[in-house]
Picture 1 (tube, rainbow, N blue to C red):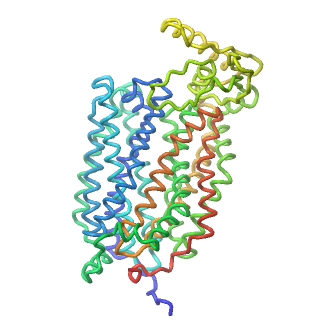
Picture 2 (cartoon, rainbow, N blue to C red):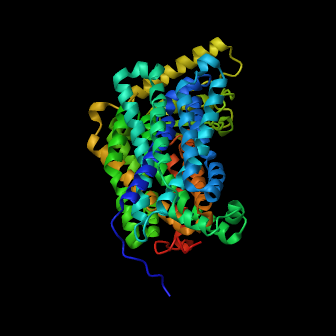
Picture 3 (cartoon, rainbow, N blue to C red):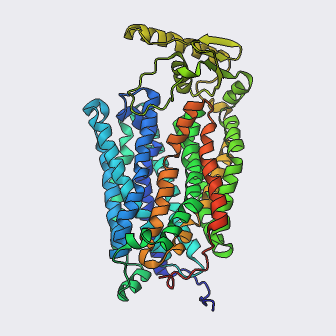
Length: 553
């Protein structure tokens, strides 16, 4: 016999407080986490200045990704605590760890001051942030869902889903405000520290709010009945009936959701600044405006999922992303830097080289010295953010760069003295730069030619895809697992999906671009994963909107 649920009712004052308190604290936590991503280019210069510019940026992205890599471990550790001692106290601890780690980044000496200790400490702080966030999200989503009446879980938990975007928005606004007040030179020198340091105020507010909250009713009921799990890790991952759901939740939901999320919010920002050469402040404004327009749709799609189901909305967002990313990012190039799009169409750049001379361009440690004519040519073009094609030359041929109809021979630095290599490098870079300029390749996007309306529309579309996949995901994950192991079980697939598949997206995409030469090839990563999620989720994931989470224990 089907369970009879009471009709959905208006939100009570206590439920409003729960949603507000959980969401506000989580906004501040995401603010802390995303400051680093938004300032990756500056952090590369401050903490990885011992490396070449290209490797420094990739290494800064890897340090950003380090915070994502450890998130599943935070999910396991704090998820276990949350299922054993309660939701409230667990995510009070997580916000303290996050806030203090962020504040310390703001006062951390740079590479110039303390050498290699600076990036080591920075990465350690990123790891602490990742562990804290691994425990935070599952706690907040579970806490809100367990307060929500049946028929409203999608709408209520959608407020938690807005927090990541609002935290990113807040971080962009504080960065933009600080940049505007101090000016670019001062901001790049020391002003970048301000957004990290002021986070201590946000931490104080968050802790005060969380101390006033009560434990979730579902956990209180379970505790009163003596049904709390004594071994949530064993129950979640040691029993096939639960482990199977964890694996399906990962590959059939969160992996695709994660790559769409990071493509729409982070990769779009990196693409604007790195590939399209739009200045940082302008790019931040575009992304912030699109976030402002798109954020209400988290609630729209969360509420819609209460009516038509979670699964069709999430998988539709993944499918649209897989089908439209290439044309959408192509349109973004034409709107944000039309001169670059025109130059690429008129004067293609080709590297002709012996393939045996060409190494993988990913050099995160900065220890590899690229000395072959192919590697040097690729490094110069990658440093100028120029897309190119590869052509095969006979063995032993010196690589050359062809821009339109002009060919420039590269050189090998092997056997050259440091002074000779430096002189050759300067000459080669000047020849390439002059020819790129003559072929119409811009060194930066012309603000007067940016189609501001079209850029905003494109970025808003990308954010709308984010709201489709992300708005209903918390409710669906909560509904997939029983109360006694819910915090642990839902946190792990969420954070493997978002921490590993999503967090590694910028680094992986840029490595693909550096290797292949095509600035759009990085999109293959999110397209393939989103497409796989559509197939697996469509075939194997069951709809959950009518699950009774109190009975499901």
